[in-house]
Amino acid sequence: MAILKILKYGDPILRQKAKEVSKISKKVRTLIENMIDTMYANNGVGLAAPQVGESLRIFVIDVSKDDEPYHPIVFVNPKIIKKEGAMCPKEGCLSFPEAFVQVRRYSEVKVKALDINGRPFVLEAKNGELLAYAIQHENDHLDGILFVDHARNIFDATEALKANNLPQLEDDKLLNEEALEELILQKEANSKSEER
Ligand code: NI
Image 1 (cartoon, rainbow, N blue to C red):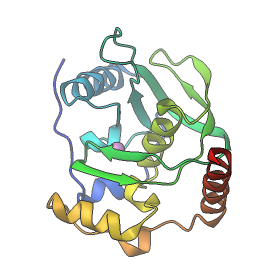
Image 2: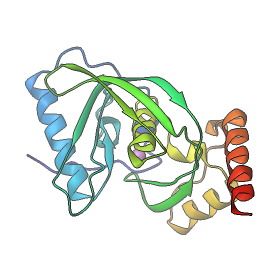
Image 3: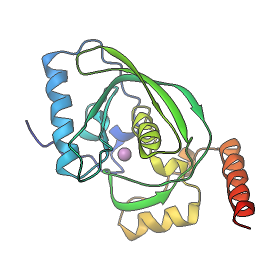
Image 4: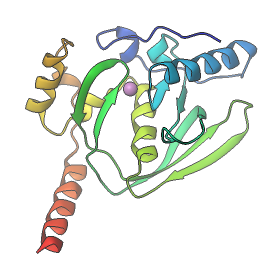
């Protein structure tokens, strides 16, 4: 068991596409256990292998509340097989200390992956719950995509990075999410008309 060093925004490894895991060897298993320890030691909701310098398709998530027992979920070679709906949660990332940015996400996802024993499983996260956007955030890390690339408001995101002495947004990495934005605007309009 070990607490690993977390790479910070600006490190090129965070922008690499991670490799598939071909075998859950003893080394991979130790890496996963250390990732879980590292996530808890840093009060994180999730952690992806590239964040600890291992460019492999692995992430861990625990969305249990403070008063609930630990419930880590391990995802090896994950694939998002369904995404629907829209939301705009405020997210942070252990590689971006203290910076929180509103991003565009799907509100429902279905993911297929292997567990720590190499057994396949399918998990569905609905209703815009934390698990739904945590899966998207961590899965992105495996493709070198960072949450700030999904920023809904570039000015706010720039401000958040600057306030926490982090490198600036990378303009060429910003994602074009017109369809998602359209859905978010529709949802906002609907909730406004319901309030009346
Ligand atoms: Ni992250």
